Length: 550
Image 1 (cartoon, rainbow, N blue to C red):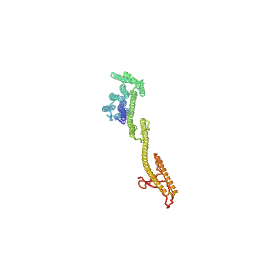
Image 2 (cartoon, rainbow, N blue to C red; image 1 turned 180 degrees about the vertical axis):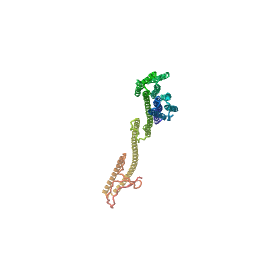
Image 3 (cartoon, rainbow, N blue to C red; image 1 turned 45 degrees about the vertical axis):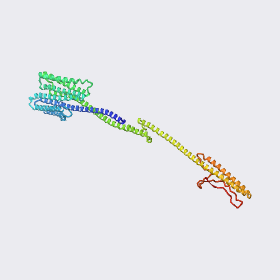
Image 4 (spheres, one colour; image 1 turned 30 degrees about the vertical axis):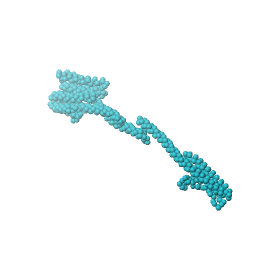
């Protein structure tokens, strides 16, 4: 496997692990965001539905005040009743707005819609019953008031069932939000039970009579349920883990509901025994609404905490999701960048260095070694290759110098051999020429001797008449012989000098002139004979005679 492929595979493997982890975190956080969004949606339904009893109970309580009041209804009471109805209608509109979005992301969206529709039906029936009771005869209003309270309890039970189911489903979505919402539902249950308990006591105040055994039993039962729920909430007051807003709301509830409204309820119980009640319906209603309102404060504190928990969890999940996506993107970018960097900074230099090493192995030392300036491992490899290159250059230079030296020696040997051969040929030629010249000169000397003899004879013939000329002729001939001997000696000395390798010279005393083939002109010193005494004949001389070799 090539190193580039190996490194790329390693990078891709690491990127796959990192990217897989980032994808896992992103998917997990996305699922968390989905769960939180679902929990927030269910909490919105819970808060919208729970506002129906919150505002409907005061509306219904005020309606029972009218029913227990004078036969002629005070218009001011009707106006105040309408104000309470507007608050209830606002809560109902918010609930119905959520109903239009169902089923939405909820798997039980259809069931939620059916429950909301049932609440609307009961709400409409309760409104109609209240309006009918107020408009009906005065003697039937008290019985109608009891029916309204009972119907209102049924409606509240339907709302409570919806709230409990939605909060229960929040448990698997977010545990902290579930705990806060569960406490909120407990507070809302206390509001319903307390409201119903208040209605039972108010009925006695409105009737202004001694309670019978059934009414006393109802009062005891309602008070027992009320006290049980109050105790479960009051346990949170001394808990250090209780949020500050919840602790403050619990203190308010303890003051307004447990203590103040508790005293009002005690007065009603005393009146139920004697038939005499210290406060009328209006006073009881004001005290009850103040106490029950403090319970709503506790409920809202828990719901607010649940919303904050979900909002924080959603923000954290969204942040983690964003970070995971950013991490995934960073892993992809880093992987691509690493692959490109490895290809450019590692693989490409190694390939270039390998190619250069191949050319270097073929003897190419002209180009520079790539990467020699780097300070990493590739630079170290390039430096090592540079050493090989320098050694090759040095070896080539030494080989070239050695070759040049050998070529010089060869040329000198060839030149010396040529000179030796030329010298041998020249010497051979000169020796041959000198041999021939020596033979010629010997023949010449013999000829001159013969000539001299003839001259002597001639001079002898004329000696009687010219004794002085004969003597001169003899001297001239002797001089000619001496000159010939000197020339021969000069030729021998010249031949001895011509044996030196670097100097080949001509014999100055002997001049070869190609007059005719085979002739040598030998120039001798002139031995002129003075003019003869007789007949005025010119003197004979021997000068520049041409002697044949054969």
